[in-house]
Image (cartoon, rainbow, N blue to C red; front, side, top):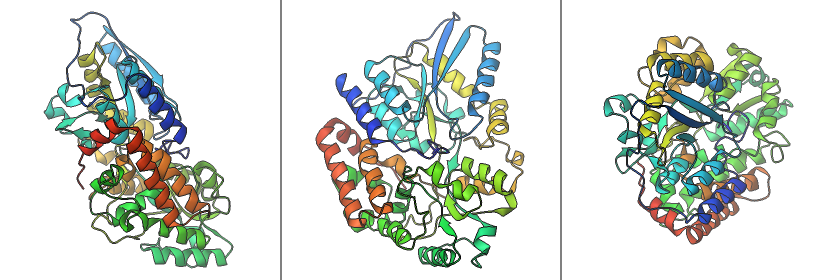
Length: 449
């Protein structure tokens, strides 16, 4: 999400945000100075590495692939042993925050890209991967800009994932619809036509944060959300607030399943997976699962319909998703980085794709291995033209305390766009009051796009 496949993609729940904040506060808060040193290494002695890993929910098969990669690496490097500790979606952000506060824990860890990664950079918990890996290697990694700060790359991407608009050709045809909507008025018209035929137009749930992506279409720059979070702009301004009117229009037109406000994404999309709903959105992993159930020929993919008119309105929502990094306290930073580089070797990126069907974030990947029509289209979406996953660029506390309840107000029919915007702005104001050190760090972050 991805999270994702099980509904809460990158949904930093409020409880998670509060737990992580409490853990950091208990150990002195954040640091303005990121860790940059290379750390300790060994001289051919025994090296024991611990890797806190997350990826299975985004890309089913990831855990099995990593187990095989570890075995292959240990065979080639008998002085190195690697213990993999899979992380739970609902807790891995807070769990690492606790470790970071104590400056102890794994040698290698994972966080979702940008906001969660950079938060730990500013907490001094991460050593820049570009300090440990030469540029002639990192130049092949895709979407590294998501984790670039002060001229350094802080975490390694492993795979690419997006969230396309998805349709069931057979169900759409019941209302005489043969193409996915490309504009919001077309979408609302399709919902009306489908409802008239007794069909659920759009299967969805209320525990993802993907709705915020629509805000991007009204922005001038990704940096706009950073500026709104730090108080230089306001989330109640039209460019941040009006997108909620689009989701409110969908709710008014009865586009969603009737229980949308009370079910998670995984439950809400069951109607689509069962051939009972016409459209939905989901990660690439979701799409592959639906194609197996409904038949690849029955799946129709598109980019999100246009609602806003800003310069970013045609950007696609793709990301490197989960990022992997070397911790600042590891005694084996060079060895940890060497293992991460191994995961980008030709053998391993091919093994990754064979195990997961999710494309690796590496320009050396042999794309001729992508043979299915659905997979080809997903890869094209993820790699052609500009892509931004807007949720990456909200401070986690603003995301968890602002975006989540704002979405629930609108989809639940309990508030309009103005109420949602006020909720988001209130969350940002609370964060600024509670976390001045974090605000200072975010004020120095100016993402492009």
